[in-house]
Length: 272
Image (cartoon, rainbow, N blue to C red; front, side, top):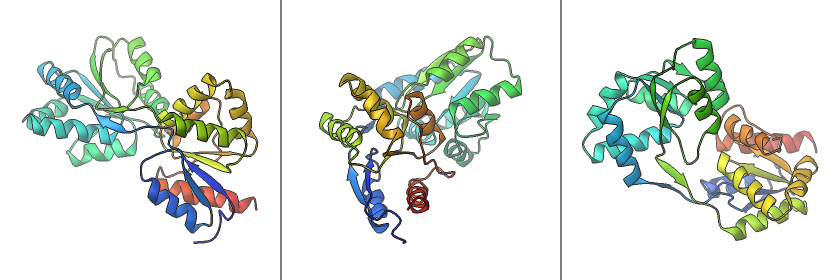
């Protein structure tokens, strides 16, 4: 692999698959620093069981899914408590909306097809697609499956449309260790880093909140506008970054960690 990152220091803000990502950076001649801006993601099993029981006891008209991993987690718990066939039957009788190709693929494995899906992998895209269908949500009950964090924009839109929304949160994000945030923020504002890769929305939100708390938010934004390249794994993460005032300079078309690193290497090579 070409030495496209020769002499570059790249911070990995995502803990998941960090070893593989570090290897890719090193193969391109760079140095990877693992500085997680997100803690462990864990399954809240008891809460999910309770939500699932309520869901099956009173099936809604709509099921809105935002992650394939979340759908898989729901079916995993359904199998544990012996209601997976019932869940599948309920989904077959529900109107399904899905965000992201991974969610669509997870549904396909279950023989399910959404009647509404986004056009760009984002929550905004899902809302836009809903609007284009002109389907009525007034008075309709909806299950909104989230992943690790809330989706205020989508929830607000569904509520404004008159839907009665129940949120299901299979996974939760744990805040990162402060020492990692401290080093990451320091390395950004001092321009020690050449790039930071973000692989989920919580990472940029945790970092931004910490920067505000330390009174260095504006310095962080200036560093991202200046030397430090902000990298997003995909459109959803990029949207979260823009919400915090950080404009991602690298966003791969294909939402894959490997694609993100290849695109970053290309970005550096084009400017060398």
